[in-house]
Image 1 (spheres, rainbow, N blue to C red):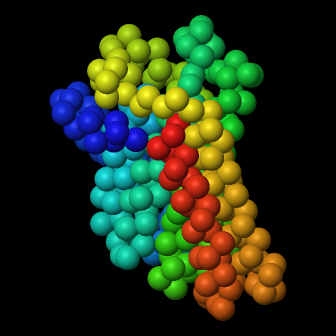
Image 2 (tube, rainbow, N blue to C red; image 1 turned 60 degrees about the vertical axis):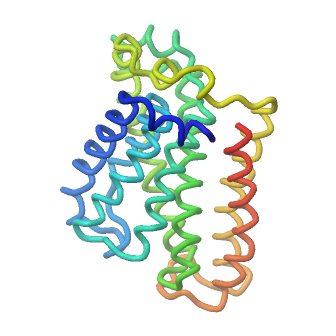
Length: 263
């Protein structure tokens, strides 16, 4: 994960961070008036930005998504949860570029048709699924820790909201932008020097750990929150199951973090 630090010495990457933050916030802010959970989350078509811009701009997309979400929170949802929103959206984007390696031909050859080939769509959808799990897991875990909202409520809503938006809108945005960004030499792997790019001898293991920690943590959190102590899926208060959820999800988050370092 050294690239999330070394990227700051590249002017283009800093500019792309600001661009991502601006675009993300600009889409988020108008929809703050359509909350799903007042004060916590809202309808988010902007959820496509962290994934697509992460694939295009790498760590610049991750930092931009984190800062963009924080900027958006100033317009209605700013609070202790914003800390976890910052981290959650950072990893929402980071996981996308760690796991998804686009097949250039499957994207550029279809740029006129504005759609991905079926195989590439499945790859993109699977990464959207994983990234949505990670984002939901981190934010729901954080708000469970501070006792604001139960994991089952927030985790399920964030996951569905993010995943649906990415599947419906993400492929079109990727096909539209990828050939142009590549032509302008703005792909993050073209901007950063080889020594600053991720280099792991076991990237496959890293990706496997990301899947285990990301999906496993969300499933474990929701399962415990809804089953072990008889908590309903849409219970609106954090009950005694909270400590069990935190204990179960925390190791998964550690596995996820290790995977991000290795991928």
